[in-house]
Image 1: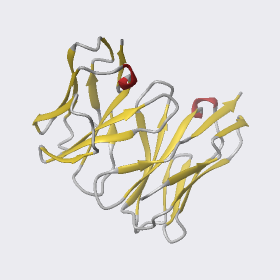
Image 2 (image 1 turned 45 degrees about the vertical axis):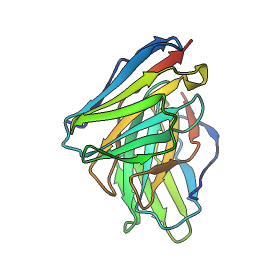
Image 3 (image 1 turned 60 degrees about the horizontal axis):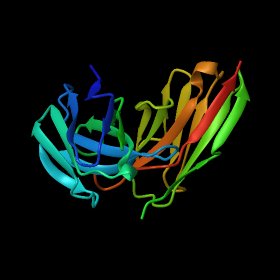
Image 4 (image 1 turned 30 degrees about the horizontal axis):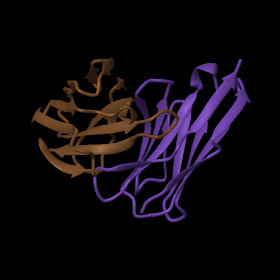
Length: 112
Length: 111
């Protein structure tokens, strides 16, 4: 099973809302990632977790809060977002180190 | 800072044609290079991964090569089909788990 799942598929939220994105994999991968992709642009790395610990934060604003409660699950908590945060949010996983990354289908987020 | 460039930005070909997509990167100190496919509004599908010690990888009609010293990779697609229409992204991995992506090549295969 090489599948990474993400929920929800679509999310519309107001600037005062709090919501969460969820990502799950059962491939035994111990590295998990959040990427943000704007229209017609390549994905940009936001966070990396290795062995359930945050290893890379690409200077992401604090209104995005990642969480890795166990080796299979990755969450992204959203609070007080801005309309410019509207994008496709992609989750990926891999073995730790130099390894192939597997991506989920993404969550299309719209902030109104 | 690693920079990845993909040429051309867009490509339109008739069905059945063989084609080559190009990727170049500025820092040759990479661990691997990965080619992805992305359909509109969808996630990324991994096509091929080439480790820095490898020269090429093949999967079906796809062949990817890597020349690390010159900072170049090519993705060769044989006998293209309309279902191959998508954006193809090249990404390199350096000293951490971070992938640096090119802007992609949008491929259209016309029936």
